[in-house]
Amino acid sequence: MGITNEVGIDLGTANVLVYLKGKGVVINEPSVVAINIDTDEILAVGANAKQMIGRTPGNIVAVRPLRDGVISDYTTTERMLKHFISKTWGKGFSKPRILVGIPSGVTEVEKRAITEAAIQAGGKEVRLIEEPVAAAIGAGIDISKPNGVMIIDIGGGTTDVAVISLGSIVTSKLLKVAGDSFDESIIKYMRREYNLFIGERTAEDLKMTIGCAFPREEVAVKQCSGRDLLTGLPRTVEVTSKEIMGALDESLEVICGAIREVLEQTPPELAADISVNGIVINGGGALLYGIDRRIEEFVGIKVTIADDPKSCVAIGTGIAMDSPLLRRIK
Ligand code: ADP
Ligand code: MG
Image (tube, rainbow, N blue to C red; front, side, top):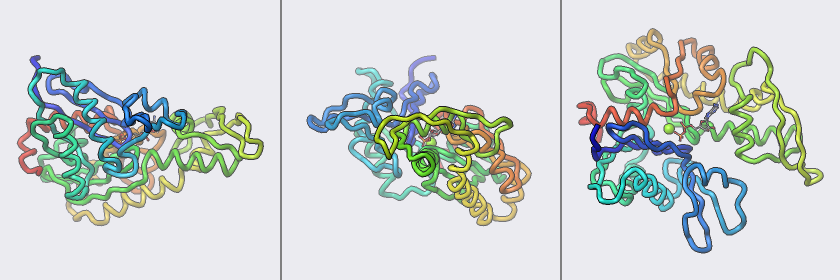
């Protein structure tokens, strides 16, 4: 297939994915930038920068520019985008047309900031698509019909709960409780229970390996190392999946509560469709063991994890680039 100049971007709080038309997902990297604050020089972007989180000397910071919201650090977001776009886009090519996924309910100011960042980063024409719409398309759901579909994107910084019908969002809620909150809860738990201070990367690793939202068939155990808060020295303890589930409980309840709220605000005909069709979850958080079962038991509706949950949005932007549905999206 020939090279086209159309690019879809999933600008996530934890990961950035770039979809090149005709090629598929060509970049999939953590949204992290390492900067030397003395010289303002970018030292690393993506996976290399993520490894530096919590491990940098004083003059270097590893930042996640989107971490706490849509764009919490505009300049760094722009520089990061520029880096990824130039990696996709060799010099000498004409400027790409870009379609960027944005969370539901972002403000006009935030939309402008994202558009501007993509233009500054080298885009010729920049359009935006609501992420739940892109995620549903990427998950292979036909959203063009007058049929209610619920899609829940559990990312790093945000969980986006949305009901879609006829290609548009009918009801939605964007929460700042997602994968990062899970990690923070684990850090707090380890401090409270073991007087052990652990880093973000260690917490995330515990979550991904033994964490769960529903009891595992067999309790899993893992060694966890950090700094003992009493002695100040490194120490290793053993933690179980049951403990991690307990630590995540509060955040999971918040997410389940938000899903219920959105269902309550959904018009009855669409709610009826959802109870028949079930709910689809995507995003990296959908990979937390048992989160599908947990939501399913809470709302009493079948929950399915999308195929390739971390890539749905990027794939959806790729498909949507050619879709007549996009005409409706500002
Ligand atoms: P965003 O769209 O906000 O960039 P992603 O959809 O890429 O976020 O999801 C990132 C989140 O998913 C992170 O919090 C990460 O820790 C979490 N995650 C990834 N894999 C797993 C896993 N196997 N189990 C639990 N959480 C996971
Ligand atoms: Mg996302």
